[in-house]
Image 1 (spheres, rainbow, N blue to C red):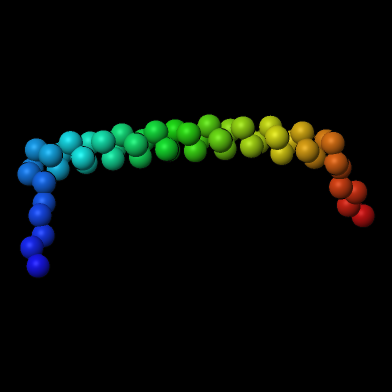
Image 2 (cartoon, rainbow, N blue to C red):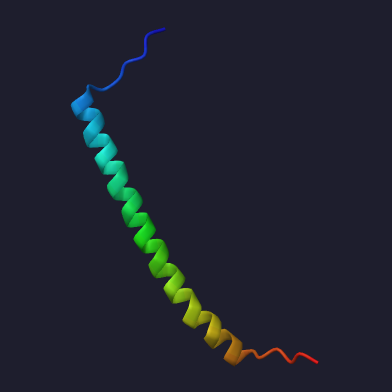
Length: 52
């Protein structure tokens, strides 16, 4: 069985592309977290929980 690998230049391009995607995913994750916090606060105002 023979395994074929891209040449080093192509590997660099692939690594750069994946790194860029990882950065975008991280930024979008932070945006999502920032949106969840106000939502949580609004939900608590709409449906307060009475704690005895």
